[in-house]
Length: 294
Length: 283
Image 1 (cartoon, chains in turn brown, yellow):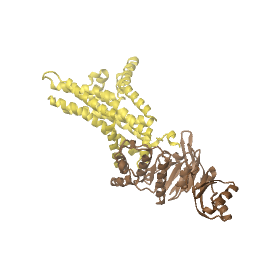
Image 2: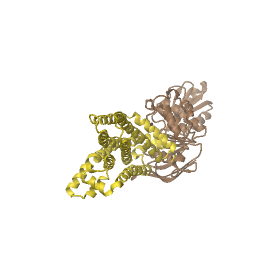
Image 3: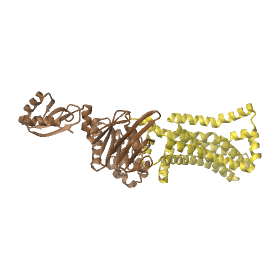
Image 4: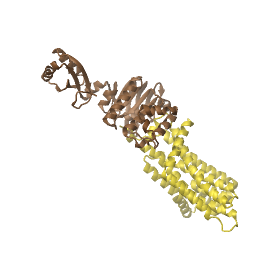
């Protein structure tokens, strides 16, 4: 669906992207991972064809450099910095719907989808960061494009809004949309991506699964293991003997693990005949304080 | 080019102009001053109704020379530059539109607002003249209005060119104010000074003056009122005697070129230059 071959982008003497090549298949959810200045936003803007660049970039077979407008018709874009023109929410959607050749009668349903219908008469500048993000998503989805490009989609959102937004994007990916997003938050990558392109100083350094990335970054997770009440004290003793950091909490035991260590714990319990009734993994790095994981 | 997109963007620009306090203030000030000029330039008693038109037009020419370049330059320069600075332009360009549609949409929208503002001012002044019984040479009055519109469009084009050449709204505004000062005052005085010091030939003075769209407007507008440029001194006399009836078409063509060339340069620069800065882009 998206094929990039040796994309190079310079700003004067500064090399922002250096011969970056990758392929993204339809239905995938790919994260562009890297620190500030790694070239994530530049890569996204090249995908949109709003930057001149060297190399070849095709979106569904359309050459982005030659036919940027046609390529952009296949892409819904949610920027990092949300800057709208001074209009009401409904006027904003009508404006972009007309540019995307979408029937303006559909904007009410678009507003309802992102839960902004009650705010349609408000000025866009009166919206909170989360609402603006949802408005940008509504605009991106107006023409039902097969690809969504998201630039640091949850950077300015609070935790609850982040969770809602990620859920929405997950559902869209499940419906078959190809998702490409930039991030430097592992939680976001773990929740959304099934592939990671690691950028550093404008170069594509490696490609990972989110699990590999976690291992690469040395990130740790909490494994929630449910065991029978009669086995709980024995399970804690085994974990202590093996040197695991763990927190018993209600019916569960939270075990602090590195990436790709889930099975080690489950095998350990299996070896000492402790039956695990359920388990789950959270990407949160904080010590769980209650028994439930969101 | 998709003209539906151009029109959509133009409509938004008209709405933006109506919300722009400075633009509304300009419209009101221009209308009030045009009305005042048309009332104050009436001769006492009933004699010489024809002369009153000439006086009103002469007053309006000076008003246009001072006001119209100022608002057109600043409107053109700040509109595009501020959209770039806020990031709204990058977001617009990320939609299925191309650079030309965005630039021409913005230009047509701003031009529509600007010309409507001029039409309001000239319209009010015209109605005041008609109510006082001055209906002679209505066509001449309309030509003055047309020339003012051409000047406004040329200054808007220059404003757009400034906007695509600089990176910040503040720089765009400062540059447009400097361009206004140069065209209105410094250019005029500079030509006069240079002419005195270098003993410049009359023909050279005339051609240098035609490089300034404001001078071209002034010459065309005066020619429209009184059929010669005697009032402008030796250079005016030279132009009238040398070019005769070809002078007005020459000046109109010159003004038209001042509309087209800066806008074409702005369009070329806008389409080929990375309009999104590295600082904004890198993340």
